[in-house]
Amino acid sequence: MTSPRDILILSTRQVFRQKRRNFGVVLAIALGIAGLIAILSMGDEVKKNLNRDLDLLGGVTLIKISLEEDKHPGVRPESFLPETQEAVRRLPGVEVVSATAKEMLWLTILRDQTNVPLPVHSVDADYWSANNLESTVGALFSEQDVLGRERVCVLGKVLAESLGGVDAVLGTYLPIGSDLYLVIGVVDGLQIGDRKRYAFLPLTTAMDRNLADRIRPNRLFVRCRTWDDVPAVAAAVPAAMERHQSIRYLKVDVAWDQLKRIISIVWWVELFIYLSIGATLVLGGFGIWNGMMSSVTARTREIGLKKAMGAEEADIMLQILCESVVLSFWAAILGVSLGLSAVFVTSHFLGSTPPHQVILRYGLISLGFSCLLGMAAGLYPSLRAARMDAVAAIRYE
Image 1: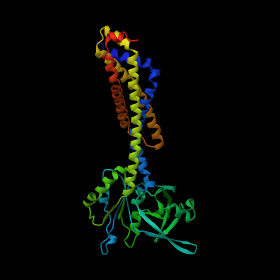
Image 2: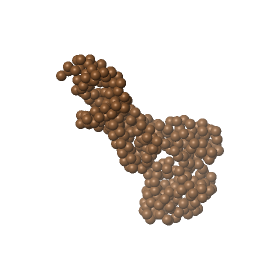
Image 3: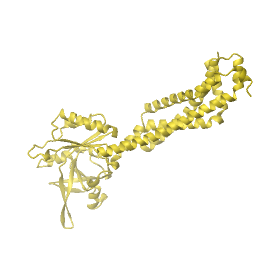
Image 4: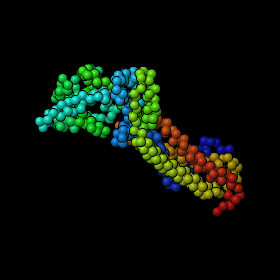
């Protein structure tokens, strides 16, 4: 019986001799493998970026939690305790939690000889990332500003423009209540909407200077990592909060309709992509099968001579099967190289790279899958070659 090493060498030589005929098959499998690695490796990173920008689609990963005690006259006002907020932050699937006050302070400015009241929103430092907001000029107040109860404020873009311009308001002071607040930045973002007309203060600063005791953290914005986490997080919030405070007036708002639409759309897109990759790989497998069948037919007399000289059926079968696996293996090597290149290019544009162990895992899975594909495609041709009658094969023209 021929040694496995000799069979591998013979199979590799045969594959490279037929490189022109195998080029199309190799390319089909390589492209399928490359697409599979890119989709699997970058899937989570693309989803994170898409979830971060889903404010365009209704903010489906943002859960709004509030205390609705104002709808019950005579009820003592409540707020979310620090330990309650921390319990929500620890829930699996939660990316960031921001505490804000529902009640507004007011900024009064003189415009066209008329006093115009403008809303002032009290928020913490996580409010910006929870709502996907960015500074147009200047900076947004930080955790240190909130902890230090600094008298600083951030203006919405429309409000800043109405006060003289985005650049002009930076570094000026605005009278809010009985204090002056330094304008350190102007904010803009996808879902800010009417809040472009707001001024924003650190929540702790507003609580310290609010004489009516109306400003308190009674609303939470919870940003989930992906839309898949939203249902589980929304369901877990009441139980997590109940361990620390009463939830009689708790209200959890989720954009369920938009979430269902997004999940449905993405499911169909993913199905289309995977079907396309699957079709490419199936065509590649069919190409291997067709190539091996042609090779067996062309080498009929050779196979007959080998059997007449004492080659066993297992040797013939193993050689044809090994040729099929070697062909798919080298196609997979090319596909993995293309896939890694696609991952690095995509990572550059997204600004985030998946963990190296994830890329390695999917690369090895792709290699294994390709070898199984080659084995399956070459099984029938190898059986046909092994079962040939030696005399009839020698006489074949």
